[in-house]
Image (cartoon, rainbow, N blue to C red; front, top):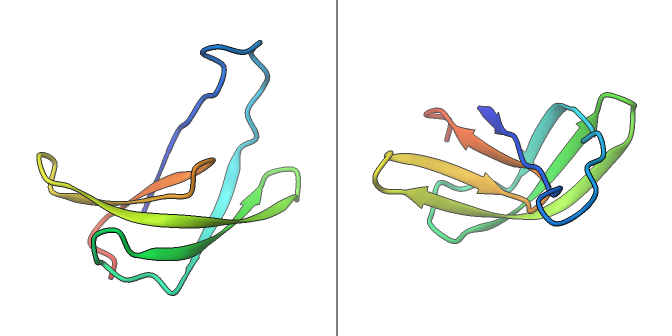
Length: 78
């Protein structure tokens, strides 16, 4: 899986975004619009849990899990 970089600074003052070091998915299914939990660990030790949605990108033929703050591309993992 690859982490997709996200930046919220387009309309806000830029701050250094926390670096994600680990992402774990709970109840993941490779099914469009499936809802699962995303457990994220950041480099400074903080942990967060997000409700994520599974999306299929047809032009690129790849599955994406988007938790709002963090999104990942699934590389053939099921």
